[in-house]
Amino acid sequence: MNIITLSNSRKKREVLPSTTDTTSTTPQYKNSSIQTIVDKNNGTKTTKVPSLSNTSFVMKDVEKIFGSNITSVNNEPPVQGNSATPQPINLDFPSSITNETLENNNITKTKNDSHIYYNSSTINNKSLFNNYWIDLENHPNSSVHEMLSDSHRRAATINLKFQFPFYGHLINSTTVATGGFLYLGDYIHSWLAATQYIAPLMANFDFSTSNESNIYYMDNETALTVTWHNAILQDKPKVGGFTFQTTLHSNGNIVFAYKRLPIQIKEIDSTNHPVKIGLSDAYVLDKTIFFVRRKTIYEYHRVSFNEDEVANETVIILTALQTCLEKKNCSSCIKKDTNFQCFWCDNRCSNGIDRNRQDWHKKDCEKLKLINEDMCTTGITTFAPPIDNYSVESVKSESHTSSSSSSTSLFFIALCVSLMIMSLVWILYAYLNPHTRSGQMLIKYRPNQWGWRKGEARYTAATIHM
Image 1 (tube, rainbow, N blue to C red):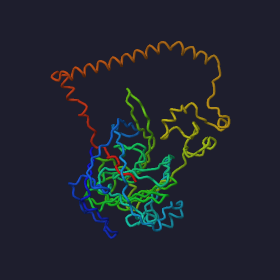
Image 2 (cartoon, helix red, strand yellow):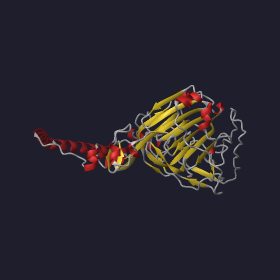
Image 3 (cartoon, rainbow, N blue to C red):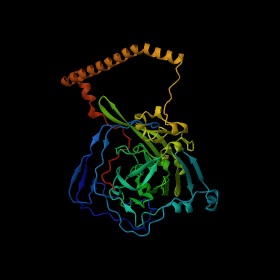
Image 4 (tube, helix red, strand yellow):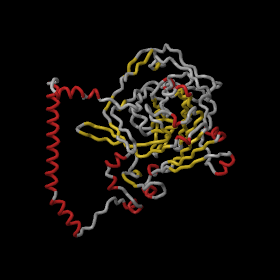
């Protein structure tokens, strides 16, 4: 998709004052004919063509198989925020919630869950909600992302001023999407909504239809807060705007806060865009198939919340639990004080299922991993099995069958090569003889007719970096 940048002839949108009535269900619509993004840095017209590379996504426990085309990120000058420097707002994570705290705040509905990587608490109480909600609309240190605030299915990367531990991995940047979520993957591609996300409310939001719709963000070096203010559903624009936010703390804790939800989340249409609340992470494996390098993304964990649990003034608190990746030496890694069985390999602690799974296989850690403290002190990684009659017989049997297995392998290789040659000959014949049945079939099923499945959420890669 080509992204055309126009000259800065359009008047800059004014951020509405705090006295705006956020309960109005009739938003002011922008000129729907404008489909381009205004370049605030210069007045020239440029055309950006994203670079493409072949990729596939195969994800565990998800129903959809996503296509290829990883889109690169174009580095451009950042959008300047407010430079005022008054006293920053206190974004420290509140003290632990006890039964006494709940009783004092008259909380009637609280739910706690354990998700291995995170513990979650869902709270519905107005007084406690005000302790977690950060009013970025009126905060002098917050910034409005102008590009995202006038876009649909766009995403932009923001560099963090701190390292955020996500599933134990230290993250230095996050990609903010208009669809109500943050993407924390290392590879920017068109299918950001698939996995590796933090989603307070993922849905088909369109910020280009209302002048009152904005995306605010603020990073105070210990926490990042992003607010989707008055987000309009493209499928149901008349229901009104959604206002919610998420805060990422430097200790790994995550907070979802929902100020205004005009309809129940289960009423949001998921036909053209997935609707999710929760977290997800995945690992990437590089594979070379027929001299073509492909990246395959596997989702290994997901946290999902019930849509009925979220309403106006709801707070979801996700407390990060210790993972294997946080342990920095062999002795502490082997101790069973986490929800995982950790192993030490290649000077790194892991359970084998994380973003570094490619290196785990490459270093042959399934065989070389250290599993107890004695192995940590001696440095022994493998043990030779005792030589007995059974092992000798096993070696003999293996050598006896090696010739037959080699013959079978050669047969299948020859069969594959023959099929490839026959396919190429048929394609060449059909191409040179389009009037034949083979030629008509090739025209009917030519590659440029292979389209993406409808209903998938594709995002244009970020063009602005913070």
